Image 1 (cartoon, helix red, strand yellow):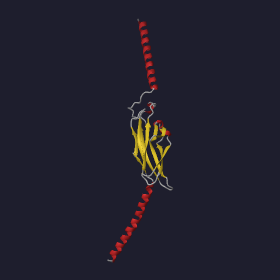
Image 2 (cartoon, one colour):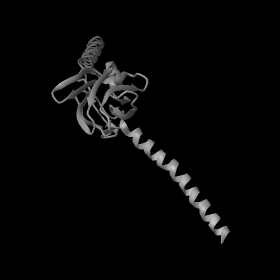
Image 3 (cartoon, helix red, strand yellow):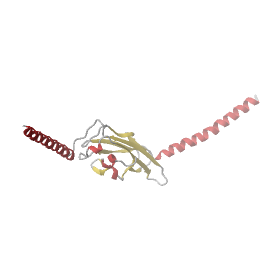
Image 4 (tube, rainbow, N blue to C red):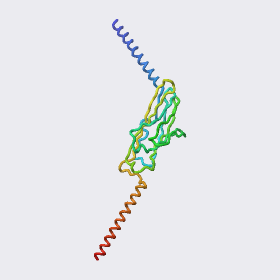
Length: 213
């Protein structure tokens, strides 16, 4: 009987010891959620195939503060190594009627915002493929990520980070971009040279025929 009582006492003490760290861990987890940044959609924002000059892709991102603190956030660009297509794409970012950025994607630095706890706002993000770009942009692709980082307004508060990705593809080898003025000039020049060569051959053969007669 004493052995059973001792075992029960030890089990009770063990359970109390186990519950105490668990309760502390739970409290710390809740406390660490003072800064919570969520995005909708999350993950991929742009996944565009066969984009061509003159096309544009509008998207809407909802930035949510689901934590217990007010926070300020920054939106920056994280890109793969610079490439031809990335360097020419155009980026527009608006918040309601306010224009936050309008320029080349490659030149984008950052935009900032702030949100009260349990509130949200939307950003209108548009990627444009400039219509003046020519055939050298055929069959290219590029990828990039927007990084949003939130920091609580309170002293010694935490931070939270979220990412949204983009992938732009300008078509395969079977996709033809519109001919530029330079291309049309080259075709006309080739046609004129072919016509001149044909006339020369015709005149030459005519002269030979007259001499033979």
